[in-house]
Length: 153
Image (cartoon, rainbow, N blue to C red; front, side, top):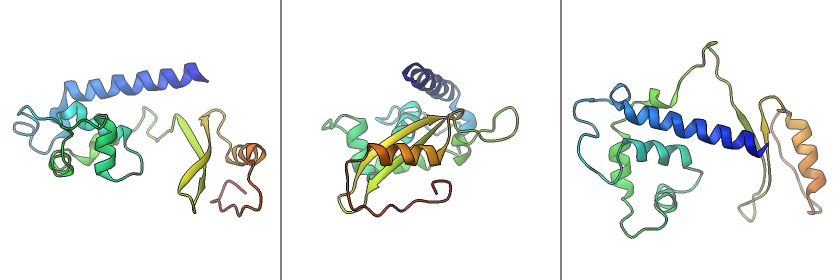
């Protein structure tokens, strides 16, 4: 599994580099956008977007730039984001459908606002019911109310 995750990670890095080598087709104004040297160049912008979780943008930027005192502002990020077309993050595969390479299953503690367990499955091993059962078996928590969407029943 670790080897597969490394392959997916390497593939993602290669795709980001490909995007960064030819950003013009992903920009609103290709002759002007990202032409000046900034803290958030196109490749950095894509990296931030791909690494962002569910935190505030301020926290995401601090995390991405390792809490550096020269971390760009949220306003700077927003200005750079406005230059990029939404289609940048949308590409169909050769068969015309969207396929996820990995599926993340997670248990989230609503009261404490933390994830208590996660299970990553490949597309070939994707089974939400089995993932839920596995995480329940691993859980040490008692007297829990589990809320899940369809597929986990």
